[in-house]
Length: 472
Image (cartoon, rainbow, N blue to C red; front, side):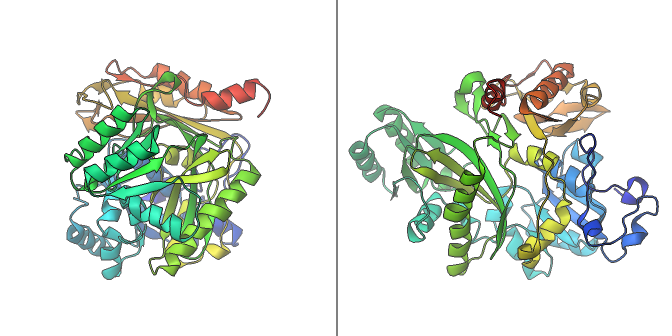
């Protein structure tokens, strides 16, 4: 994708009446789109994005909007990402191949979307080859790659979290659960594609979860099991950027994990999200930063494993205050989609500031509008589902004001868009309120012709109820 033919500043579609401001403009650098990229010679970049999901489509959409970028590749990408970037058939688990591509194509920055390559040390290997990459090191990625690692960090640096135990033997884990009682949370220590957590409401469920994990259901990820206190309260997603020393918060978001309406059915990777969430008040925001995010950044630095990248904190707002129940080390999916819609600033300078240790001099601007995304999934998800069904009506759906459609699991074949995963589409919308964003998103959903797919019809329901009650 050569940007000269469609030079843009900031987000693709700013809310009505808003003007996107590039950090280059803030610094007095001319970004006149009528004069083209030659006005910012010295800033132009080649970027490689790794991943293929909805998160990566949203990132590609936002990165492609930057006047700093003249070439964007995505490996391996999907049918939607292909509209923003040149998709390349690169095996991202083959670090040597990624490095060779970067050298051949003069890539200036690699942006790592998913957690698996981070845990495998892709950033370390790129850095060793002299290639700048946005994302944490292998050691810092343990915040997501090992539940026990994160719990130990919380204990060491007084970060509020639930009580827990770590076990390598089923008998010891069972004894702990029986002593603590239920409800209780049983987690595989390692990465398990979002499926390694069981909220056990009964002793029988806890015992079955422990047996399943130690019997190898999650392979090496379940060789150690972490058992945690069940936290009561409101669950929110809190995101921050860190350059190893400084952390700055991103906008708040709320996702919906359960597969069916009214939060019923099994957990999923996420069936929808919205931003901002009204329960994260200024006071709650400040408390999460002071008690969870900043101590984490300081603790990782003190340990000699500074964290550079996106800190995604799963936080429970309990009666005793915010408590951390998990960390992820990348943007959430589908939370990333709503964050990118609301981000007014150019994301590329933010990523460079993270890589270069310059966040202390950085700030981000956000549109005040609400953003909401509805995930359309293949029938049967999160269980077995069939790939290859045809999806139609996407162009008509995207014509609705404020709507963007990000692809998660799609391929293009003979001019048609086919489903190629469990979570397949992210139908997103901006609105002056969550209620308006929700209405636009579902209007778009209803224009999409995909009999083999489904979605929840209540994304954003808690915020909508607050708005109807006049509580904002």
